[in-house]
Image (cartoon, rainbow, N blue to C red):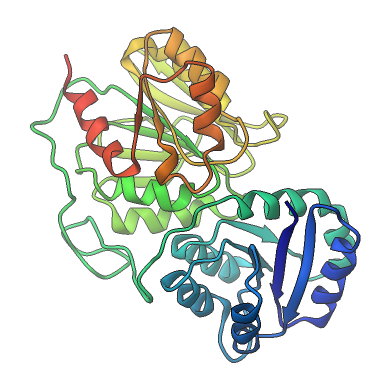
Length: 358
């Protein structure tokens, strides 16, 4: 199958560079481009693409508004290609929350060379996006907040679930996710109470994203969510997200769990790697750990989950129907490393059920 791609970017240089990069490729075909969303709308209605490659900052209608309109009607898998300045990264995170499958960075300088150097990554991302299953989202919808005082989204509510009581023992939860994971993690974490067990998360994200992503989640969750720092204690009510560009491992000292944030080569082409987190959790936590593998392309985390499972940990995979990309859970299931396969909406409840067991 040839993946049909449509580009929306106000830069003629970008559109020309992408056309040159994709020309002659047997797997990906550029079927059209437009300098802004207003022109793109009619074009993609007449000839729907498999994937949109979308810029964020454009005159007229910005890419985020356009994305929300697309996702509220007939969703098209969308990859954001944007200059990731500090402000640009914040908007790109909003795009992921609005339903974008992935974000690719483009520099302000050396653009043509960068696009050529990242050709393989972009083509793989576009192919993966074409196989994804974006969900219909209400136009203009924003996440609800879990904090009683109101969160960054400005709409307060109690979490969906509540713990029966606070348990003295902190049985750690480790979660790995990739493509589609930013939205999936939001669903899980906003459904948990403030005294939920400590959660260590590896989500494949660029370096500039994780601190802002954690801060955003912290504003809409009852739990305390933050980007992990070396030596942070994983305690009840805390969710730690591995920093982009670094690996995160779990350690146990005097009965307490801590995270070790360390540099090193990519594992399974990723840094942070889910396998690194899962294998470290198996070493120090054994059967006291709950491992969860969620939506994402590739196989990072599958072998680590097998180590967890064989060590007695409880292991859960998100089901195919609710995954944006069923790659990572599928590989873990293939290895017979999974005890339960659950829809996304059941994962938070499974965390609390595991926490309540003696």
